Each structure stands twice: as structure tokens, then as C-alpha cells.
Amino acid sequence: MRAAFAAGLLLTAFAVPASAAPLDAGDRAKLEGVWRSNDNPKSDACGTDGNFQYGVEITIEFKLTGGEIYFEDQAEGSGGDTITSATKDGGTIFLKLADRSPAWDVKFTGKDKATFYDRPFTRCMAAEPRTNLALNKSDMNYLATGLIPAGDAPFYGVYFADSRVPGGCKAKLWQGLAFDLRHPAYASLLRIDSPDLTERLEAKKPAGFARDTDGMGRWIVDGVKPSAGGWSFTLVELIPPNGSRGDKVTVEVQRTKAGITIPAWKRTYQRCTFS
Image 1: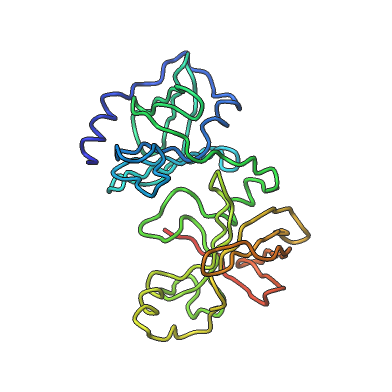
Image 2 (image 1 turned 60 degrees about the horizontal axis):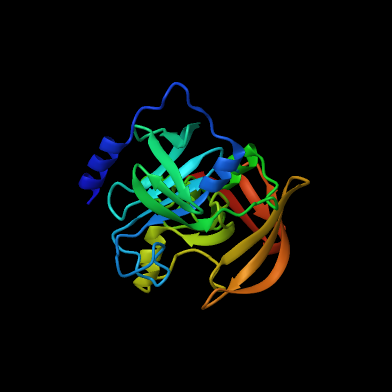
């Protein structure tokens, strides 16, 4: 599928015209979100009945990252990329990507409808305003996972390893936190286990270090604002097993030389990056 799809992309995407102008805020807002093209004729465009098959999903974010995209075609062509240029000429938008060429051409065809390189897509999830996330570029670079992957990492860019993990960032067995703040439609904080730790636990072997086991370890981020020495997060815990909304709490996340500390949880974490 990927080979045929890539060939179609090369045939339908063109060089950016010299007359193209920078994309305005209105068009950026219309682009942000999760777009889907569903190849299952028995399902709706977004696969809301659970039958999103053999299709393509594109996630686009501008507001907090300046321009990131994640492309999922359920094949090896999937991955994230940086939008290096977003321009418009007439009714056509051109998205230049750092690691994919030529530029993608996008045309709006209706409300939440567009063609990407002549293939019809539906915006199945619009971006949230995210005015409650008072984060600058420096904050995002320090805290947040991104849409751009690194190798086979379970999350992209940054994670914070629990300081109780032997070996810190070099450890293969680790538990940590991921601040998923770059997605255009939702922001969350997640407790994550490394792939090696997940495999070990599934084999019913002990982790070999102290770790948290009190539930799902998932929180919706309802807001973030700077505070003395770090950030003040408003979190809503998701209760297992179904992820229903629990209590809302405010948690101080303090920046340290090596990572972060969360005094209310009595936890310290080392900042690590996937490479």
C-alpha cells in the first residue's frame, strides 16, 4: 500500500509557486486537528464505528509547536515531521516538510473537508484553543513529547525517568512520565513504562526497582501556568478501568538541574531524550 500511495503523492504534489504567501492564522486553525481518509466503504469517513481500515490519518499542530505533523498510513511510511513552511497560493495550501518532499498541497472543499495531494480527508477531531496552556517554546522543548518520533520510542522526544530507576536515562528498564502537550486536540500527563519493563512485567517477573502501581497513571491536563521555579499543572485523574474523570487537583512541577521534582508526589525525575 505504501509504495502505491507514495507514488500517487509524487505525481500529485508540486513545487511551491513563487507567489505563495505565508498561511494566515485562520487557515492554520482550520488545518489543526486530526484528519482521516477511510478506505472502508462500509464505515463513515472517520471510522467512528470502529471500522477505520486501510486508511490514512494526519495530525497537524501549529499553535504550540510552530508546525508539526504526524502521518499514519498503517505502514512503514508512517512518522512525524516538522512543517518548515506553510503557504497559500489561490485556493491551494502548500506544506513543506523537513524530511518529505515535494511539498504537500491541500485544498479545502467544505467545512472540515479537504483534499491532501488530491485525496479526500475529513477533519475528525478539531484542535482545542489551548488558551489554558500558558507555555512558551522553551517550556515546550523542556517538558513535552512531540509528534516527531525517534526510533522505536514509545513516546517522542522527551520523557522523565523516575529517579528510583537504577541507571537513569541509560536504563532499559524504567518507569517515568510523559507530558503529552503537543497534540492539537488534547493535553495529558502519562505514567509510562519502557518496552523492556512492559515485557518483563507481562512475563510476571519483578521490575527490580521501586515503582508506582496505583492505577492507570493517566491525567487530563486542564491547564498549565508558570510558577516560581517551574509550572503549576491542573490535572484531572482518569480512573481505571474505563478512564472516567476523577478529582481535579493542582500539582506543582518544579524544574531541577537534571529534570523535575513533584513535591506533592514526593517524586524526582531525570529528564531523558530519545535518540
